[in-house]
Length: 273
Image (cartoon, rainbow, N blue to C red; front, side, top):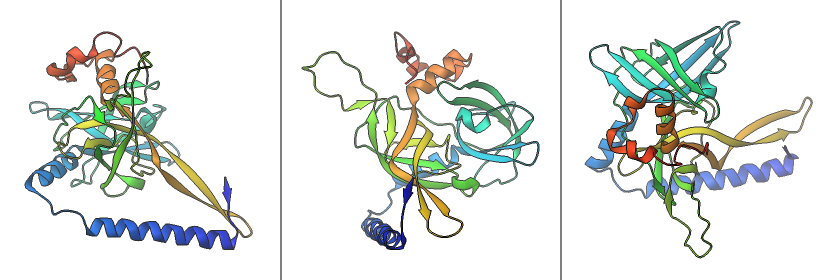
């Protein structure tokens, strides 16, 4: 916990204002949208679904999810979210809604793996676009995160890939630049768990948001008040490879694209990273 006096709080606010000004300047110099960037943005928005969990006693939890598959005959959609969004699964009502259709549709949890923090949810009668998968990302590669912060409207934030999974015992080898994504620097908040992390250029899914680090500022006064801020650069991701392994292990191998099933051989699914 970080404690600030009035002078320290003022300095912190000035620093935040400086950062905000820099961000606005960067936005102002951004390049104009292209047809391809518009396609990518529309695709990731139409793949993102909000998950709402209501429990006895009036408690309510919200999260985000991505669409894995749809069935035109049954009109059912398979969603993927973080397990902690729908856990524990006792005496609760789960529903899902899209960015445009804000009336929640009843949903059912089909499978959960708490070790890798993934859950499969089924919902009917929503209009979505299933995601495309990318098994690897490159360090420094730009990404979009689409989700519903604080249970509100859908938001998109940008960032870069900060960390990947790599293993080697060869000390003379170069550090790999590409691999399954585990960390990004995009700042997220409550309600964004389960949201998709997408390659900025292709729109392919690199993983979903698992958790984020926060810092708490304590304000002086009686009683003391605390404000919690997310820490940029500390957003952990469940990578696509782990998602594909989870789908296969949970009896939903049909949801794994045929072109990617060969990536699940060997020790690819043995690690819980």
